[in-house]
Length: 388
Image 1 (cartoon, rainbow, N blue to C red):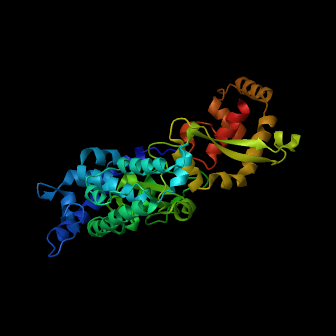
Image 2: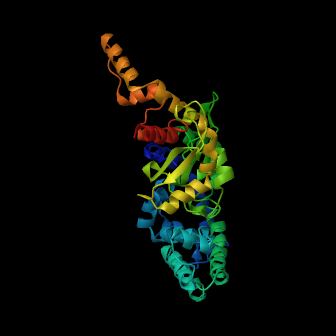
Image 3: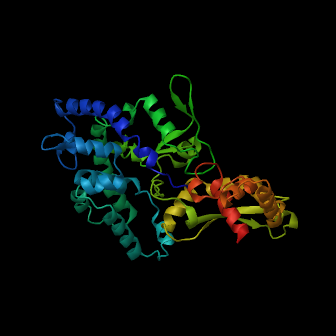
């Protein structure tokens, strides 16, 4: 998973606000003066209260909702914090308790199971669902009681989202705005797999793209975030529509972090392999994704690798690794020195290390450019492996 630079995203904020705020204002007013407005089951107030300050539409809140980061939303507005926390509680609740305890290296005792469910609920604490929680005093005891608690919260959240959907809904985003966003966000390769190009083009009248616009937090659960810029992640169709979907599995948020050194690809020679594997004359090796457990939570790293089937899919890219191994032998240090000397004799500038890497391997090995070409992370890791 490759970290995304949010710079190009923030450049779209003014244009995006101009395009989207009017329709949301109209929807808000329509719901505000409806004869039978939808009530927020958690607060017992009209849903429109989520968008208000002193009884009128809060324009700054609306700006934050559309173009602010999640941390901004949570820190500035208690109502948005309660909403996001409640959604997270429901969305991530499909965990398998035994699997979670194993990942935390904890014993599978009754006490540990209860402690885990309590920690999970406390992590997403919100005043909204506390009254429901108080009626499920045994929610920690087993899956049945825990799921009964979650089901009741989810039922109220579904009703709330139906009301929110009348005001904020992804279906309100025109296709031309979607294509324009994808084209101007500057994402060239799927950040989830780093295997597929994201292609943008102009057909003479408008922007088009082959990419999907993934909602990091799925709109089916986080309806209020369905038009939030920082919830949009350009991705390939395979990652978005076949692997990620709306699975309640927590992974790294690509605008905050990527794999980098926390997870590395490495090639491992077969036990009975030959010298051909070492010199890049065969693909008698495997590709492994090694989790180093530093920096980001190891759980998020593993969840992302598992969700997008990276270990399995990258086995089909052995040819890329074979070429790197071959070029390592073909373009030895002496050859590089001769090339630099020749450039000097011709009065040309010496190649920088990035330029030499590009010449030798087809990749610059600049960690800031991993999102510009497919398989850059694989090449980056393998080349560092053979250089050490």
